[in-house]
Amino acid sequence: MNTIPYLIDSHCHLDRLELSKHDGDLSLALDMAKQNGVGHMLCVSIGLKDYPAMLEKVMPFPQVSVSVGVHPNEQDGIEPTVDMLVDMAKNKKVVAIGETGLDYFRSEGDLDWQRDRFRVHIEASKQTGKPLIIHTREAREDTLAIMKSEKANEAGGVMHCFAEDWETAKQALDLGFYISFSGIVTFKNAKDLQEVAKKVPLDKMLVETDSPYLAPVPNRGKPNEPAYVLFVAEKIAELRGMSLEEVASITTNNYKQLFKWDSTSL
Image (cartoon, rainbow, N blue to C red; front, top):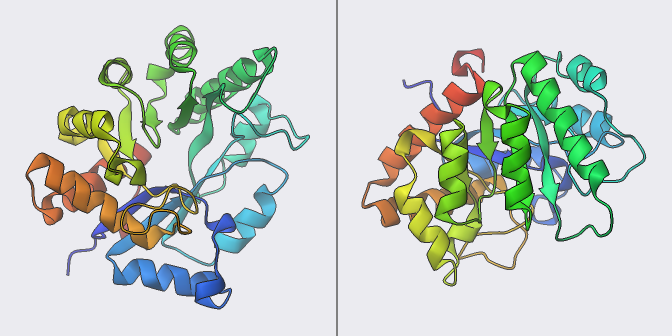
């Protein structure tokens, strides 16, 4: 039997899932994911205040890895330092630093604090050897400028939930970063993003849900969950003229390479 899972959800927030349809039981949501071929998922950190609870929630599940970091918009009162992130990343479940980056859509005023926080994450990533998970929204120029100036290429990582243009993707790819597509790529009005999905090198592509947000068609507008990464992979296969099996195999292998994930540990 092949030990590599069929699909991997490379970015989700399991501690924030809407579990009412699963009787409030996370294990049932993970069972549904498994039924859709999703054998592994990365539960991504948004803030440090809720991080211990998130870690406790997913610790019993060997099919779940985690990251450690603070979202660019998060202001829960615990500001990360390099030493703090490096220390927290020692947990064997932690495979990445983030999510981090810049988001000018939801934040206003002087955003030097956001840029400084991004730099902290990049340094922690370089020190730990664990890749970055980067979020960018209405901040592409500054995001790329900081990635270049702070030598984020030495750390590597992924541009998650990518929704930018091809030029932005190309610059990230030139820095050695992967591009991850979420349910947005299934939306009818996402023609430009679909063109990007056709161009990204296959060995630099990942799929994700970003659940509970951004559910893909045919579940758009409903709470998202890891099981629905199947629909993202199906759309990528359609756009690329490939089989679902090929997309699943390629993106699973890419995840394994980027996050140094060993499926035999499951």
